[in-house]
Image 1 (tube, helix red, strand yellow):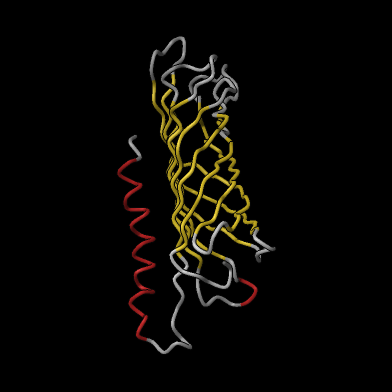
Image 2 (tube, rainbow, N blue to C red):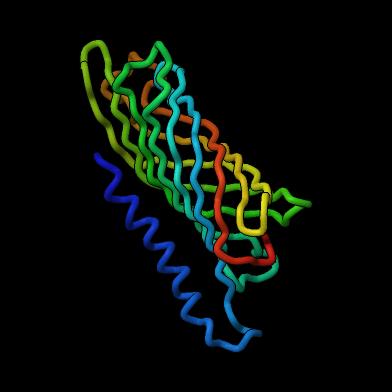
Length: 206
């Protein structure tokens, strides 16, 4: 399953949401909504949970903090991310190993402390992996996956933030036809992403 067709619609949806805020700019200042959109990119290093090596690749994400929320929900937002892990294979991994994901979900950012802002997230989406076994020189599996994690954003300038992100994924019923290969029935990739993002406007959380 090629995930590239899914990435465009996911990111486009978030830009449509932000555009709706821009259209409301003629409202009086006291009621004018705040655009809280951020777009980021980074490099990821993951344990693909396939022979327990490592893979490297790139990640793109879009964050949209929900405006006008009750006080106890300040910091709630939506996130979409796409990741392609296809480089830096460990020596014990098949050369065709590749993991691509397209996820969307909810995040919560705690109030900023000095220049640091921690956050947590829960994600749902699709994952695709190419791999090789001794009996199968090449194979591909795609399925619905979940992810959870969090990290810390660091304010570099008013518009630019640095991010360190950790994510743990669950790929169910993986290797269901090869139960002698651990982990039987489930794959759990996990790893870190380091990158930067650009905020298109200020908000009380920035």
